[in-house]
Length: 143
Length: 217
Image (cartoon, rainbow over all chains, first blue to last red; front, side, top):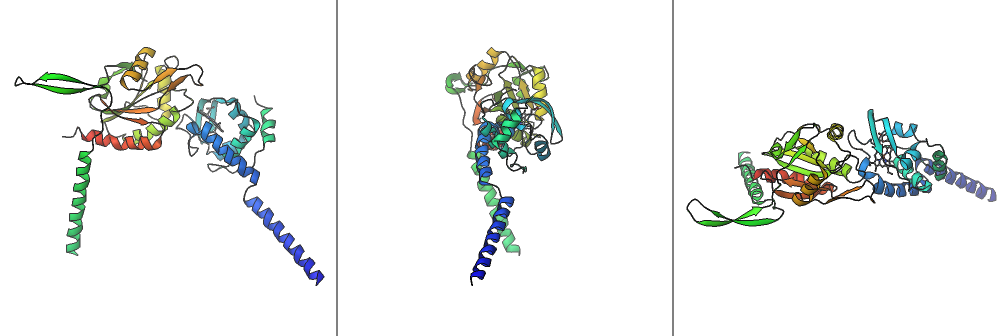
């Protein structure tokens, strides 16, 4: 009888373990969800006028945020771009842009992390978590 | 088979009738100050007429560095606004919305667009040209106007009733309202829509045919 109990509880433990890790993998962490939600608020306030409600940008004046490859390849530069602004030629969505984005020096590391979690997981992107520590580290290497 | 189809035809006709009679009744308001003037008719009697505020004569350089004036919009209703190309705030939204209306009326020669820059220092015609090309509207239908500070600011505030000022404490320096002003073929203001509000701009797109209908007689 005792042995049966033990087996059952081990079985249950394993089951919850599997369930938990699966739901983590398929879904997102609570932290990521919170970053995403705050990031969306920041996006609406500071970025949506230019980059659009659907991340569509504006013709050949403002690039869209739907180019998942671009955002992946430049993941380590996004914090710098957003905080310090950017200008010069870039190729996004198969098009050339040569414009200027204003700086947002007021953003703290956590603001940047939240924004980046949002833009890299919205509009067809799916890069997962981006931590405040990552933002801080990448900011050390801005050109 | 025959009976119901005649019936539905009648119903259809009736609906059209009702709809079109509704449309005829709708007329856009006339904005701005108004005055009265006494006119003498041909038979010698006099009559008091209302005089509406109109857009005065203007002449500005456009994106091709050629002069445009009121005649550029002769026989057209047009949408006017004030913006600048390096605007970090509301202009991208206004022009994103305006571009949709432009696309909708692309084939209609009775509809025009006129964007005035308020950045007389930087937005020279060549800059406007580049902007228009990148927005995908570099044709005669959407004109970009460059003028002196005095001319542009005066016509904005006195004639189009849009407030613009320079404020060095604001990021982007220029403060302006995002109105899209709808002007009729008689140079009168017939609508003002918040260009940053997609719903209001949709309303403008619906009001344009109502305005054009006034001239179809």
